[in-house]
Image (cartoon, rainbow, N blue to C red; front, side, top):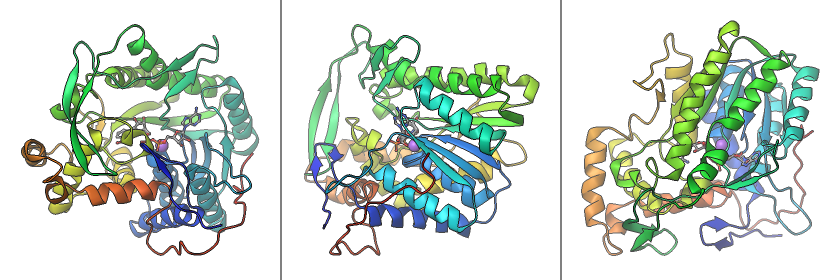
Length: 395
Ligand code: NAI
Ligand code: NA
């Protein structure tokens, strides 16, 4: 079959196996070109199939020669229907890792559940004995609590007051006003239950109580801050409360790792086009202006460049630099005063008419389609793709 992008709103319903494979190969080549990183050797990545988690798995494997276990929640292919992109990414990653002689296995299922945790722990016991790093990179709209069975849904809402600002539909380029009603009822606690730190801590507690963490163990999760432009919907909104909780959990986990001389970190990363961020109002307009400015300055990065720099210059540097809240900052170039001042100016000028010139809508669109394996250089989209792609190390 010939696979073409089919979009509905902010999602793409199809994905291209060859395009996803090419994306993974390009990321691997990038990591190899940057040289070895003296990092962890046995790594568990939770949320390993797309975005920052995939980049972390690639950097661990091809930068540090690590054995990796990846956990993710992806849709396998079926007759006449492509898989979700994270499936193809993981298939390509494992194929390349095995070719390079690296251990790589994967588990597909709900990381919030007791079953998937147990399956992962059993796999570590059987194959790796102990691990020295856990990367926690889940982004999910829902979580079923493993103990109570309660299903929580996260929301992206401001807190306290209605939010009104500009946004763009990046498919049409139309800039319009959006207005989002403030959180109500259990919105805040539900969002914290899904995207806060509880599940991260559960993973580390389970691994520790089974003796699966080696001395000097490290774990890292990803957060975001962003500028005042997006503050009301992001950092001071419901999702921001979840990030506050995640960041606080790093300290709780670090305390629990003292006997092991271990440590939990949160890294604040740059705003990037992923499936998760395309769904947040206002963020696509911000990103399209940010990309324009950062590309003009020669400081634009994607997930792989971010994670490479995070590992090389922060996590595995002689002394890991942190901010006054204990966080690693790899959003430093996004948050540079000159960059933010320029974005704020452009924001005022942004209309449907001006945006194609002052913003990087094309770059946004390309990154969005790239997530699904489309618009990737070097891929022949006219060629039939018929094989059902398997993930070689899937358990
Ligand atoms: P993503 O959507 O690309 O990746 C999410 C991953 O989680 C995928 O591997 C997916 O399969 C997995 N997943 C989702 N639900 C799951 C479940 N129930 N069980 C197992 N796996 C599941 O997201 P992205 O953007 O890479 O986000 C990762 C982290 O980085 C999040 O904490 C996010 O808030 C943070 N971050 C994202 C930024 C952005 O601009 N995209 C900026 C800074 C931080
Ligand atoms: Na991820």
